Image 1 (cartoon, rainbow, N blue to C red):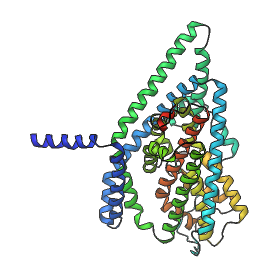
Image 2 (image 1 turned 180 degrees about the horizontal axis):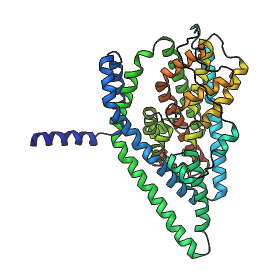
Image 3 (image 1 turned 60 degrees about the vertical axis):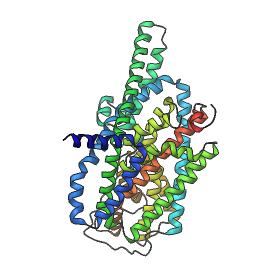
Image 4 (image 1 turned 135 degrees about the vertical axis):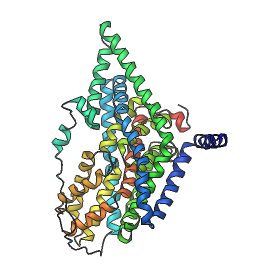
Length: 440
Ligand code: ASP
């Protein structure tokens, strides 16, 4: 008995004593190996997935639990600390960077698909067994109107990120005005409220740190389950389209992200080192929203982004800036065109650029949002996903490999947000350069 206690405390000691990133990275590699091995043993894979799924869900739920409070309190504190004029400038700069990055991403995605022509020669034919789905493209006015919550409490309760951001911003700006009031009866409690919100934000970051201690277990389970269930389907043309997508993701990381950082005198290697915890979390959770608390913490602690900027740019980016998703949308619509013997024309590719950008703005930062957007993009170029059609067969193939695609695209989505937050802070002369090995 005594022996057992000593042994378990030794194991715990080893667990907590090992560097967190090493533990997460190790869990990812071991999870992938175990998952691939299980994919070839379906009789063991099914019970393995059903017994372990719980531990992966715990990780996702813990992250989801803190998303709304982290955004809400950080954003109120951030907005209340910025003067409104500066807030507008930071906002416009952030949107400009998102736009530039999305255009680079789309160009890379479409170029790769035009060079490698994924799906060509597949000659898919109609298959009545495949169920079609339809998705209506959200109009621009709907996208913008939905940002304004009709009931802020409902938006908070349902975890609607953009409406929560909107309300927290408005609240924070008003709070800063009241704090500055000449009437002490107003300014004093407003100042207290500001400090309470700041303390709540700080407390939530402590919770994030605690949750990350569980991350290696969550990561192992999530990765092994994806490979155990998706493994056998990833063959032939699907491996090819996956390879092209991941090549495009990698190119965007180096050209888009690396390029923009280097142009602003920042080391790409130092960025990756500082951002890797968020990148890995995005990869395994497949959710920009769930990764938000981590992105916000590491941007501040490792990259020197001030909270006044990260609390504002990162939550917005998690919902509207999706470089990985637009690359995915462009390559997959090209795949479906080639696979069904109807390669996309130049005009159709232009249309893909427009709808993919809008789709990414409208899509939530949750797992699988991109594959729904794909339906919308296809519809915009006249390729409706109808039951029994060849397009529906090709679309079903994309659904089959979606979890793997989603890992890559979410990792890029989150990285793009952190890049933009870093560059905007640099423009605002608020980036803590000591974190980049330079004097302030
Ligand atoms: N899972 C992605 C994200 O959270 C969205 C997508 O499915 O493309 O960023």
